[in-house]
Length: 354
Image (tube, rainbow, N blue to C red; front, side, top):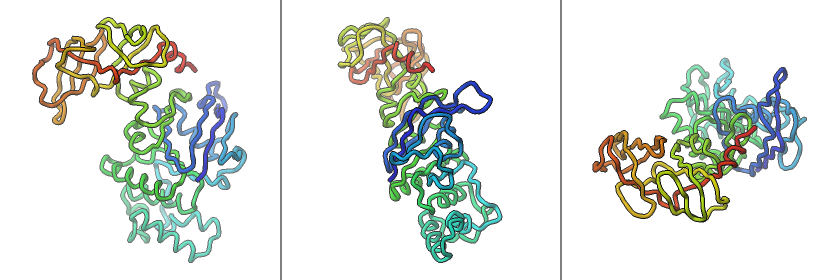
């Protein structure tokens, strides 16, 4: 299992004055499955290609087990990349596609045949070995591309938007396959995605990037429960923000004062965020307040409410049978103090600065 370390990694493309990746620092433990997450153009694929050696590093270091690999060419780096468009050889059979890397290493034919057979079984592609890529579905092509990458036993597996070309059913299937294979082989894996759900379902940790800058690097649940900034909270589907002032264990806001947990945040201006599913409806008591329900949408297993709080539209998720309140009526809500997460306003601004 190979540990990957990125130190002050920076990439500026020729002819550009703006860095695509800016002083990126990451430590990826051996055997971990890491997601590089962010919107289009944030630098995640550029980072992946620098790890692979496909893009030269402008400055900074890429290390495998503390060994600098900046100047090791891609074919000798033992980091293999799987692309979203598969890049299979159309004129080759599936077994020849899978065994191509071993053939380039001049392995014996019987060794290649045995390892191809193992990969076909691992990828659930037995019986497809004589077919051509044009005879396969998108999900099957992705499995072939994955098998071709893994057969050479790479130190690091790099996946660039591996599920983006698949429909919803196949994405679910491929997620399960990628996760099971990665756990079985214990290969250090980094994959790029713009899909929060995909990152949460697959990754041990997520590196979220905006505009070439690392914003937060932590386990998936931290992005929901403890986002570092308001922008990160919004990226993970939480627009429920309440501006206020922290005074000890009290949060003073325009809609009322709220008891909060102990936070390592100095007294002063803060932003409070709370997940839609953690706002309680139809109660009064500690941390209660009134707000206007603008819309309620029955979703089968739950009801989604659009609620106006201090001039901001909040999402609130409640039980499907909650029918006491109607649209354009005031209702009671509670913010459980252990579900309120505080962000210091200055830190929120500074962390987004380039």
